[in-house]
Length: 163
Length: 414
Image (cartoon, rainbow over all chains, first blue to last red):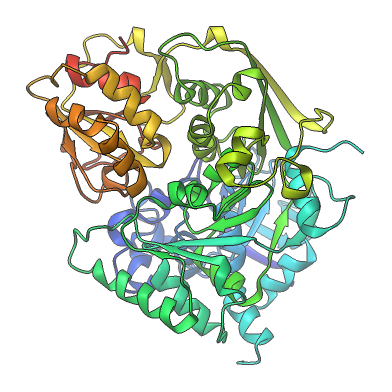
């Protein structure tokens, strides 16, 4: 996976799936319709500020709560290139990989980074902030394969020869 | 080589005795469950992926429970899509009004000891009560399983919970799991398996264990497992041996954390608004006037739960301003409760008896509340807005506490 650089948005601990996309907007027909309501209860301005390639940095237990897949889908639709958090809730973690959203577990940069900073991500190697390198783990091969295809639906389409 | 219970179950599934926590393996599910909320999405993704036939239609169970009977205009679309998909795929295990998925799966022996089971609902962890590894996944992954018959899993590390001794009178397995979640916090078991052992659990019924396994997701756990014993084997209709997935506790696993409790120390507790890990003894909750009580759900809607509540309500009436809503977890529980005179007691006490299903727990129908109102409920989540507006106060507690509260009109455990 190629390296990329993006502007950082900072969020805290326990960002639940109801914050990422509240239940009342789940009935909207498409993810594009839901996109303007991403993070609505906490930071309603975020959808207008986030530019393609930007990065979210958060604390513990990101994505806790329900099994709704619209949560990673909305984050991806906002153009976010990856979410870096101290830890992720497990159903959200799987749903993200399956929808082609890169997640990185890291607890070293939260104290050193502020909103608006530029961060470079070298997937599987390190994060670079102000010239300083922070090591990150690499995803297991089977997950990288799904991510590279852009998610599980595409990976399965390829498997079944429909693309 | 020592092993935790989750390692034993996964080793059996993948036929590899070297599998350990941290390994990524592809497991072949013994059963999968799809509920009404997500069936249209699963069917759509399955076709979008280019699949034609499910890998094994006998291993697929479809259950309508969250939306039964329909309460919103578009709900019936989910039933239609589910029925179409079942017909197209030759899926015969479909339950349209028989009760909550997490009760039916163990009750109808779709999930038995040693099985690997995935479901589209986060409370799929419940079947750990019969020693199955079961957990929730999203609809895209479910569509992938339906096509391939397998799923990747990272073998979780284990938190071992030992409880020994006899629980005081009036203290239930619900009080035990709420107390443990309070100690762990809502993220304390994220990614991990919880393994319960000790003579307190040996003395518990299968129902009581299902209640506890059901709530392990509220601490973030991937699964919550009980060792299978003769009671489990009888409930699940299997011989009680390792060949049939009933593993003995060897207590020789590599545990990331061990929690030890004495049963005698537990007291009746509630999870207070609006965090499931905000646990307080009922004795400290003074003068909290309530508007409603809900007895039901995949946590506490089983026959024993209804019986415990009925024993308290017998010959009494709920407080005049309280609505008591009773929702049996399944049709067979409903039948048994009628047979045993439990439903008559509820009816005489002024309860509102609902159809088997999720009912009020998912806040779609059957007793939703409004700003400033308070409910004592036996289910598993008190998130903001779960049972009506985001200004409803939800206290999660046992059926015993719920019944006493309904009579008193205040939060009470005696």
